[in-house]
Length: 264
Ligand SMILES: C[S@@+](CC[C@H](N)C(=O)[O-])C[C@H]1O[C@@H](n2cnc3c(N)ncnc32)[C@H](O)[C@@H]1O
Image (cartoon, rainbow, N blue to C red; front, side):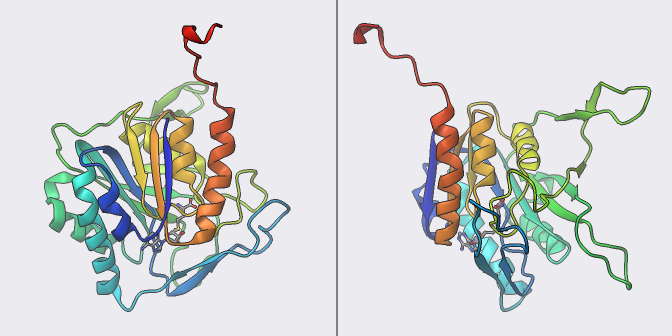
């Protein structure tokens, strides 16, 4: 499976994607928190990225939505007619992203508003603790879009040891600082989440693009599942971290059989 990683702005790199070549666009952009996102405290252990940061600040919500709109518009020609789009955001902008995609694609292209519930993080004395992210999913053509319902372990005692269809609430732990897959890159998402999404929304052998790939989680998950993957990021550290994760995986995959004419 091919893996391509490019350093640069999603807007500039989107036109370099072949037309109608991508089955699944997953984007986990900055959330417009107004902060600089840094390597979490105590996450910088040996062999991990110790001091990485990226800016998560926009002039306004309108500026944030403009940022997404122009990049999504530049990427649409690269999507196959059966493609799905998942935008991973949180309570700050999920309502605006839903309106944006209604406007760009049409409300009939809405597929799911997935809730990723993760448990980690603080709580407030003023409201219910905010313990989920929102993954807004649309497709290009509701009659042709690819979907394979993922199965998760059944939770009831009667069905113990079996699986059931996943619902739109995905209960997957966030990465703690001791997690083996933790790279030290800020806001890294768990492989289990990306594997579930790719399995559901991208056909085997298909192609995934993550134009704001950070540590490259989407690309690692895609490669593990036998999908082609393309990733972009403006942050040079993201490129280094993602390449470090990807190429050992690539090296571990079985070598293609050599042709018979090679004399084997
Ligand atoms: C939330 S992080 C992605 C984390 C990633 N999902 C992971 O698991 O590591 C968002 C990323 O978007 C990148 N970014 C911000 N603006 C960008 C742009 N215009 N083009 C490409 N990447 C951008 C940041 O550098 C950051 O790495």
